[in-house]
Image (cartoon, rainbow, N blue to C red; front, side, top):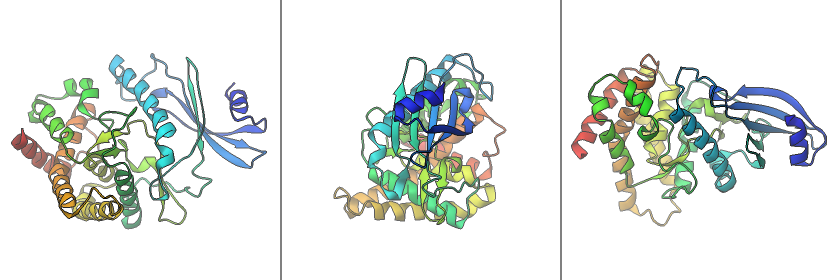
Length: 325
């Protein structure tokens, strides 16, 4: 029984199961909250127990998908073991408490961010929450700028082309399918790379009660990449079509301002270096939209995220990527 294993792992006989938080995507395990009566503290436990025969919510069952998910949980463990402790209050993540790995499953015990004040969850962005989330991204990207990402995904983000052959094959024969590798290469050839979260949607962000601080969870797809991918995905996860037209430029400008401030102590970034980064970011911004659009039309062409703004940006991004090829 899980609770008995946790008692041994944490050397705490007072542990009790408090609640089931959620089932992991595709049924690969569960997240539970446990309470230590002796410490008066909650912990979050991510219990990962992959079953090759489970079904995907959208019908995407394949050996490729199964292998990708297995790697994603190994990557998340590597992040918490090797990188999480480097994160500052400006890009807060949960502390790693303990890990137990067996041939059948993994128990990942983490700090309960709710108990640390990060109790608020939002599905949509507003003036306050959106820019707080963007600031978290900027600080995270600045912290890990030029990091090689050892033990993480060599290319961060859950939708990147090399790990999504099924979705590519499912695409209709169009210019995005034919140019998928060109778009992918334009992003992968970015000069300014960092560690990106890889799944930076609002659902993976925890907002503090002070409505200013943010913490992030779910690091299964963290890896090396252009930071533009995280910002694009964040905006697409929390803004509708009208809001994207209204907020996009403001969001990019605020992100770049926050990134510049966070990089101010990095001696590698003189004025010229910063201007080069800024120029590359603006060039790759529509390319990132084109890349995600390519994924969506193969994965779920009816997604609400496909909108006029995305289509417009994707067309610009495709043109830019083709010009660079």
